[in-house]
Length: 268
Image: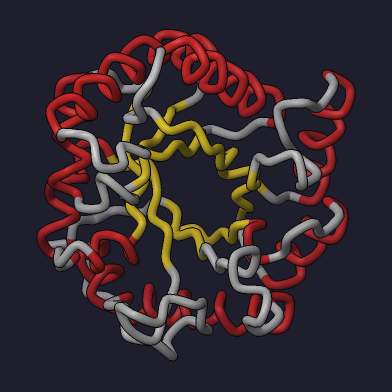
C-alpha cells in the first residue's frame, strides 16, 4: 500500500515545504486541500497549475487527490454544484491528480431525494471526469457516512470515473466495522483516509495508534483482500488548531502505517 497525507494537517503551508515534508518522511503522495486559503485551488492560472505538477514530479511525490468541498447531495439547483465539480475535475487534471474528493452534504433531507440528486450530478460529471483522466470520489461523510449509504448513490451511477473515498472515522461513527464497510465499497474504492481520535465525543486528531479507531482491522481487511492502493492520513489540524503540530507527527505516522501494513495478513 502507498502512503499519503492531507494538507488539512498543515494549513497554509507553502507548497515547497509540503513537498519537502512528504519526501523527507517517506510519503508517496499528498492529498491537496482545494480551498482558496490554501496554495492549490480552482482559482489558479494555467501556469500556476503547471508549476504545481512540475514541483511534485521533480520531487518524486504524487499528487494523490484534489480534496474539494462540492456537496453533491445538497438541496438546490444543479448548476452551482456542477460548476464546482467541473472546476475541481479540471484542476485535478492540470496538477496531475487522479482523484477528486467530494462530500455528500445531504443534511437532513429525505434520503431518497438526496440520493437521487447526488446520483444525477455524479452521473453528469462522470464523462467529463473520464475525458480528463480523473475519478470523482464520494467520501463516506456527513449524511452518507456509512458504506451502505454511499453505495445507494454509487450503484445507480454505475460509471468507472465515479467512486468512493473511505473515511474510516465516519464509517466507524456510523457503527460499521471495517469488515462490513470494505466489501460494500470495494467495487467503487479509490483510496482510504485514516486518522485517530479519542472517542465518539472527542474527535480532535490524535497521533495514529494513540486513539480508538480500528486502524489495524482496516488495514488487515484491505490486505486480506489483496488491495494495494493508497492510505491517506487526514489529520484535521485546520479544524483543531490546538492539536499537536503535524510536522512532528508525520514521520512517526508513516512508520506506524508501514508497520500495520507489514503486520497485516496476506491475501487469501
